[in-house]
Every structure is written in structure tokens, then in C-alpha cells.
Image 1: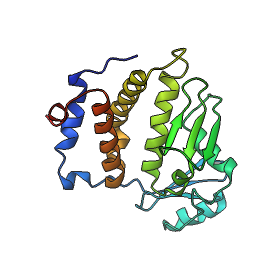
Image 2 (image 1 turned 90 degrees about the vertical axis):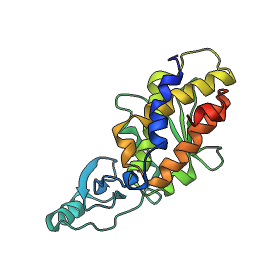
Image 3 (image 1 turned 135 degrees about the vertical axis):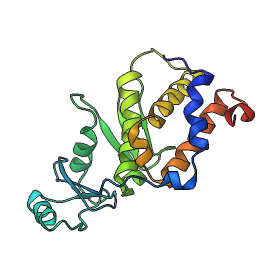
Image 4 (image 1 turned 60 degrees about the horizontal axis):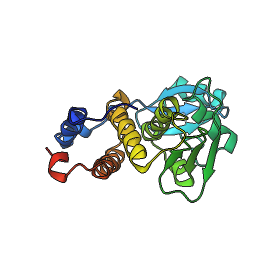
Amino acid sequence: MKKISRKNFESLREFNQLEEENLVKIKGGAYYYDFEGKRLGTIGNSSKLYFVDKSTYDQFKAFNIEVFGTSFKDVSESTKIAFIKNFFPGADVSIFSIEEVNSIAYIDLFNGALYFSSDFFTWRNFNDIVDVINHETYHYNNHVGTKDEYSAADIVALELETLMYQLNQPGFKQTSEHHQNIFKAQLVMQMQNAGWADEKINQ
């Protein structure tokens, strides 16, 4: 397990100092995928996620117009799973959608199974969606099966490590302001769980 020290939180202090104008995101366009979960390309500047067939996408691209496609929520379960598995290349990942979960997503640290709340699939912002998936990818690649049992302190340490990784990824700055605010609240909560006093967190 990687060590979490005070200097690891320099990024949080920088994050606290971001002014409102710096939270304006780089727009990568609307992201289009086919119904097998394969990426087709981007058009426009909305950062939305759409699913269409390739011939439809080619027509949109030819005229360089961003047109609605099928939402993440409305595609089949197999398409949702295929899309998520793009971020777990070569891994045999079990993915489940469940109604009742305390967080938007979580991973079983013993068998690597991934669980996403039904609310997750109502999201439309591609960058927010991928940021959550990347969080679970980090757990999958670094934490699954590393111990026979995990204490509450272990879980907090693993979550802090993963959140700090997430914060320092280039794609994080492209997520929505709403997503970043939720992330910050989660990070502060885990730091408090780890025993960091409020005054240390805000330094």
C-alpha cells in the first residue's frame, strides 16, 4: 500500500486555490460511441456522451453538427458494459448495475467485481463518467486481492490514495464544476476519516 503523507496533499491545496474562471473546462466535444461500446469520435463542444451507429455518426461528422444520440441510460446493458470495459483492457471484469448503493460506484476488493448505481447511468457528461470509471480502474489495478482482509483504516487509506491519483490526472480538470465539488467533499471526508484535523486539511 502506498503511503499517504502531508506532502501528498499539495494538490488539494492547489485545488482549493482555483478561482472560478479556472474551473471552466476544456471542451472535447460530444463523444460518440457505437452500440458495441466502440468509440467513433467527437463533434461539437458539449462533452456529452451519445451512442449511435457508425453510418449515423458519419453523417453527423460530414456536416460537423452535434446531434443527439441514444443516452447512456437508454442503451442496452450489454452496451453499457462494453463501454465501461474500454477502460479495463485485457481484464475479465464483472460489472453490475444495482439500485441501492451508498456511492455512485464501488469495487469488491476481493474479487474485483464492479458495481455502479442506477443513477450513474443517467449521467450525460463524458468527462464525469470517465473520471468515475478511472477511479475504479485504479482500485482494480492496484488494490484488488492485495490483502486477505481489509480494516476500516485500510479502506480509508486505499480510498485516499485513489482520490489523490484521480485528482492528479489531466482529465480531472475537464470534468464539470459540479463533479469537482462532489469530489472535493469526498476527499475532505476521507481525510477526516484518516484523522486529519480540519485546520490541517485547509492549510
